[in-house]
Amino acid sequence: MAEIIFMPQLSDTMQEGTVIKWNKKVGDQVSEGDILAEIETDKAIQDFEIDVSGFLLFIGVKEGETTRVNNMLAIIGKKGENISSLIENSNLLKTEEESNLKKEKECRIFISPLAKKIAKKIGISINKIKGSGKNNRIIKRDIEAYEEKLIRKLKNPKENKRINISSMRKRIAEHLIYSKFTAPHYYLFIEINAEKMINLRKNLNDKLSKEKKISFNDIIIKAVTISLKKYPNLNVSWKEKEIIYHSYINIGIAVAIQDGLIVPVIKNADQKSLLQISQEIKDKVLCSKSRKIQPEELENSTFTVSNLGMYGIEFFTSIINLPNSSILSIGSIIEKPIIKDSKIVIGNIMKVTLSCDHRIIDGATGSNFLSFLKKILEDPIMILI
Image 1 (cartoon, rainbow, N blue to C red):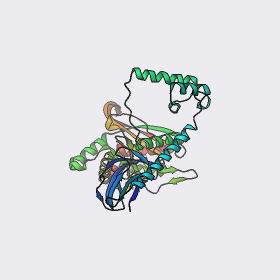
Image 2 (cartoon, rainbow, N blue to C red):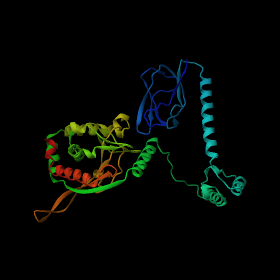
Image 3 (cartoon, helix red, strand yellow):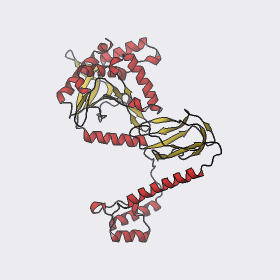
Image 4 (cartoon, rainbow, N blue to C red):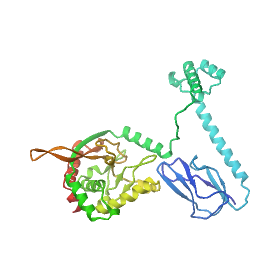
C-alpha cells in the first residue's frame, strides 16, 4: 500500500523545509536507508534518509520549493499503484490550510468605508496595502499612494532583483534580534602585540606539512580555552531562574557561508591539542561551506570566537551568540608604530573585542579574562605546555 512521506522535522526549531535536491526521480526504486533528498532547514542542508522501500510514485515539492513540516513531500508505494486519492486528499488539505491562512489574514485588515469603496472602484487588492491610520487602518491616502506606485511601476517596469529569504537566513535574523534585545551588551577592547604569535606560527609551520599548517585563529582559540579554564565565570549561560556554569568548554567558530553565518562547535576544546583544534576547525569549516554540517555540530557552544582579520577588518564588535554569555571579535594584525624600550619601533598589533552579557559578567570579570588572554597571546609558547 502506498505511503505518504511527510516533510520531516530535522531540527528542534524547524518549522518548514526547502528541497534543495532530489536524489531520486519518479519511477525510481528506493530502499530503506537511501538518501531521498537534500533538505534545507533553518540551520543547515541535511540528507533526508527514508525508512521505507518501494518505488517513488509522486513528488509533491519541487526543487527550490518550501513547505511546512508534516506536509506531503512524496509518495512511495508499489510500482503502478493508484495514488490519485492520496494526492487529491493531500491537495484538499493544502487548499484548506491556505484558505484558512488567507481568511485569518483578511480578518485582521482595518479599512475605512471610503478607502474600501475607492479600492473596489479602481480594482486594487487591499491585502498588499499598509495602513497609515490609527491601529494601521487603511485610509483614503493609502489607496491613492498605492495607486500612484502602480502607475510609476507601469511607466518604469524595471524592478529590483528579489530573492526569497532562506530558512537559514530567517533563523539567523530571529536569533540575532533576540540576542541583541534580550542580553544587555557591553564591550571591552584591548590591543595585543602579535610579534611572538607570528614567530610561533612561522616556526611551527616550517616543521609541518601543508595539510597541517597552523593559522592565527587556531592559536587564538587554544589561548581562549586556557583563559576560560582560568576564568570559568565567562563559560556560563543565563537561564530565567539560574546561571549555568558549564563543566565543559565548547568553542563556537563563526563561519561565513553563502546564505549568512553559522557557528560550528569545537567540543571539549580545552582537552585538545593545538594540532587537534586546527584540524577540527578545517574539517568543520569545509563542511559548513558545503552545507553538509550536521545539526549536532552546531549545538551546545559555551563561548564563541568571530575572526574577520583575514578580511582586513582591523576592529569590530559582535552580537553575543546566545545562550553564550560572551563572544570574542578578532581583527587583523596591523603594522603600526609602538613604544618599545622608550623607542618608537614598528610592531604588529591585533585588536580584539570582548562582547559580554552584563546580566552575568561584570566589567572586572571580563577585563581579567581579556588581560589574561593578552598575556598568553603575547607569550604564546604557553599554549604548547
